[in-house]
Image (cartoon, rainbow, N blue to C red; front, top):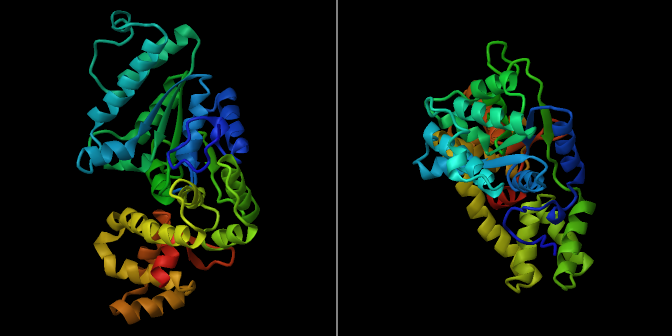
Length: 354
């Protein structure tokens, strides 16, 4: 049974809404032998659900690695030992599922140094012998930049060159930061010149958002009027994560329309602000002024500059440019078709515009 309003990431393609094209592209990339795919998209757009659903179809062996979990578990660092252990544990669990016990597994892994390249090499050797493919899915990969010992772009470049049966799917919600870390355009960077398949997940349009809500309510036998659905889309937009929250509050928590909307903005603003808090802490007052200006509709550079100066004092043009660039890198701010700055998250926008 579909559960579109379940707040947990989806683990099955049948549970996804309107991502068939992206799933087909992931499958096609594997079939074409394209060993590196990057999935971009802002928070709550469905990247994790897409990747977990893709690997659940079990056409290949796969390990899912959530780097954010490692980052917060290890006091805001990403130790290479923790990455190694998660990949090893994931692969040995796969082997156990295939009926390959611990004794037999000992012959798969070499006696050399316990590092990620050796581990991937051992996995590749086993996969070659079994005519199998191995996919390492790395979610929120931009957190790998907090590793002090390993250059993960170098590891991936080496693997792409040397390990025929090892594939990567990389995702990240801080789009600009992830692109900087992978550094494809830098002629001196390890991944320069490597082929990559890129997917950018878009927000739902109004029609898709309305259909998502209608189907979610139908699953649970609830009737919701078109006017209420239109009001939700008008305020929340096409971010599937927030749409699911609204549906969850209406169905599981038995809230009325207005109460559910207000709950999204009260709870959602806390969630969104906590997520951006670490990113803006070095120049918090100026970042807050810039985001507030944009949220209030001052989308031009000059409008943002005037509001920021009026709120926090003088700021050099180069300083404003740097802060705006950082907000775009972190996928907090976007540019619209007219070149104006806009907030990526409607919940954050409404919170800051009040």
